[in-house]
Image 1 (cartoon, rainbow, N blue to C red):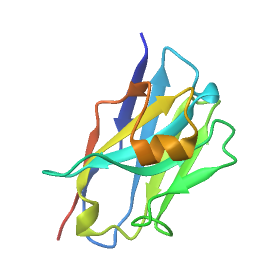
Image 2: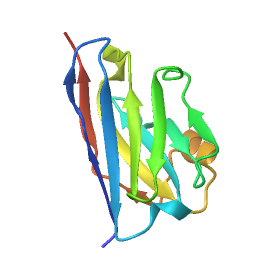
Image 3: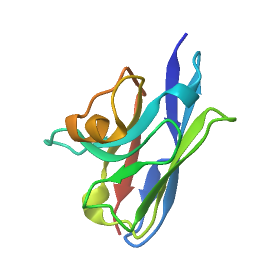
Image 4: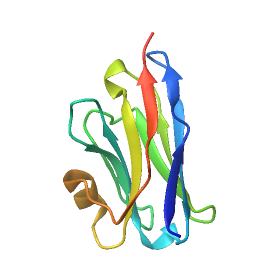
Length: 126
């Protein structure tokens, strides 16, 4: 069974950090572009950060550049999103997705993916 499972969300104060994980099962992430997306209440889902299958190319939304870092460990079949200097506007449900055919930039800009996780809540509040 193909599955993506996110973890690591929670409540954090502004300026704090969280590390999200996305573990894949039932398929190998090594051939897929991977992306992190988020959806805040009343807003459309948006691409946050995506990485190519070979980890060479990354994409970041302007709103998170310099604060978030995407990485992948194909040996562990897991992708990470390190989030630093968190702001209240980062509050959202965060999803990971995998896509075999799209470039990582198209994946993030068009919000597409072959497989999606169920999401993990991130709340930034004092």
